[in-house]
Image (cartoon, rainbow, N blue to C red):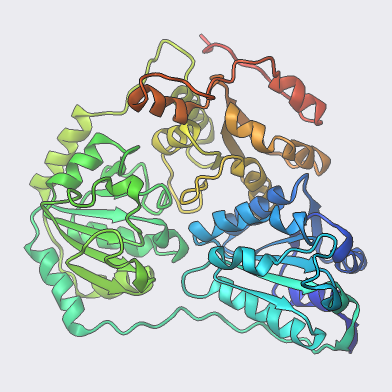
Length: 510
C-alpha cells in the first residue's frame, strides 16, 4: 500500500511490537506526530517535559521489560537534548531506538533553522546511527535499527529522518520482525577444559557478577554455577539482582562503594570468575593491585572487554547464559566450606553500619525494603542516594535496580521511573533521589501527574551535593566549593505545584 514516510515510521514501530513511545514534538517531526494522532489507539505517546526525560523514560522502559525503548524528538535542540539519555543507554548496554527528524535534504549543510548533524554528534555513543534521505530506505532502516539495538551486546541506535522523507510516499509492505537468535559461539574444548581445571584447582574461588548476566537472562545458570563451585558472590552496580541479594553467599557490592567483605574477599581469593562485568575503574581501583593473588577467568559477550582494564588468565567470549550452561554441564560439585566460613567471618566483622539515632538515607532505604518485602523496582539518581540504595536494598531478581551506572547521569531516575512504571504497571516503582539530582529533572513530575503515573519519588534532602562534597571532605581539605545547597527551595510545594502529593519527613517515627 502507498504510505507517507510518517505513516511508514508508525507501521514499522507496530511491526516491532512497540506500544509506548516517549517524546516531544517540533517542526521537523510534525508529520510523524500527525501520523501518531491517527494511530493513537495503537501506540500510546507519552509527552515528557523535556527530551532528556523522554530518553531516560525509554531507557527505563527497556531495562524493566527487556524490550527496545523508543523515544522521539525534533531536529536541532530537540535531538541534542536526547544525547545524554542516549549516552546513558550506551554505557549500560540498553536497547534503545531514538527517532529524530531533520531539515529537508535541500536544506542540509546550509546552517538551516534547527539543523544539527545529529548522526555526527551521536556516532561515539550509539551502536549505529542513520540519516534517511530517501523514503524507499525508511522501512528497511528502522527494521535494521531494532535488530542492531537488540542483538549481541544491546545498545542505542539513532535514526534521523529528513522532513521531506516523512511527507514523501512509497509502497509499504508489512514484514514480520526477524527473530534475534542468541549468538552461537564456539567454545574450544581446550578453553572450557582450562576453565574447569582452574576451578577444580582453586581453594578460594570468588564469583564477580556484572550487568551482562542481567542482559543475558542468565540468573538461573549463574545460581547453578555458584552452587557447583561452592563460592561466595559479589556484584557490580549493574549486576544487582542477577544473584539473590538475600542469599547467604552474597557479600555485597565490589569496589570503592562496596563492602569490606567483598573487597577483602577478592584480595584473598585465588580464583576470580567474572561474568558479564567490564572491570570499571570504580570496581578495580588500581589495576596493578586488583585481585593480585588470584587467577582471573573473564566471561563476556564483547571481545573488546577481555584484557581491556584488567589482565586476565583466561577470557571466554560468549553470551553469559550459554557459557555458564556449558560450564555447568562439565563441572563436578566442588566443596569450599572452609573458605565460605572465612567469608562469613568477614561479613560478621565488617557489616554495613550507619548512625541509627538520626533519620538517614540508609534508614530510609531499609524501611522501603521492609515495606515492599524486597519486591519493588528501585530507580535511583546518581550519588550518595544511589550508593545507599545499592548497599541497603537487597535485590532478589534482575531488573529490580534501574540506575545509571557507566555514565553516572544525575537527573536520570525520575524519567526512568516513569518509563519503568509504563513497562511494569503492576509493580511498586520508587525513585531514590538526592536534592541535587532532583533539581536537574524535577520537571518530569509534571509528566507523572499529567498521566497519573503512580510512582513514588523519595528525596533524601541533605542540602548538599553529597557525593562530591564527600570527596571534598576526603581529598580537598574540606574546601566545599559549589556543593552547598542551603537555599529556600521547598520541594513539597514544588511537587504540589506540579500536580503531585507531597509529604515531608524530618524524624524517625518512634
